Length: 212
Image (cartoon, rainbow, N blue to C red; front, side, top):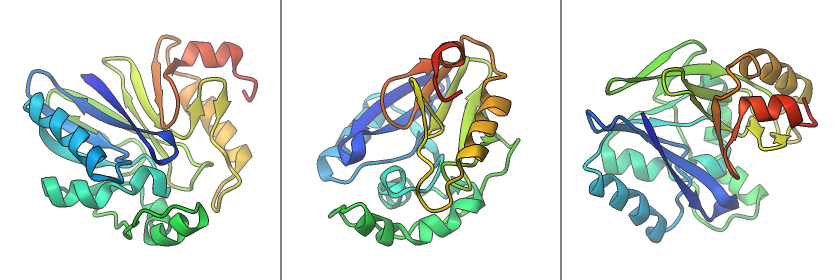
């Protein structure tokens, strides 16, 4: 499968479109659009590639990663897939927006297709494996494409850093343990596409990440 990244203005959030170039099915992951310009950027890419959106997935439900959920649901008629442990965060999307001083409207987010650890998501001929790694949020997941060697990691692991754990539901020890046991066991050349910032690899983070 192939990965397209969009950097949207709210906290520099990375939104991903993962697609199978053979079947043209795709998933929109962590939609962080909060303006017409950003909605149009996503829609134009999907239209230009002739993609068919079959999944809307959140790695977690912090407002910066979920503020575009309502738009994608309405535009493409999709259920929202996320881990149920993050349901309370989705319900408090407007409250989260106020806490971060976000002026954009944030609608409550409801998970309509719960994901569990070990579940498999099919996108055309491709497969994403759900890996539950709590600590940044209770229901945080990573999405692993074993065949193509990449992970959509949300706010778990960054280039030289890890996700913050000072927000409600955060747990630093749980996060570090999860990264070590669930992600650092993957092949060194596995590409990590994070929720913010540039991509990295498991091997680089194993060798150089000061938090691990």
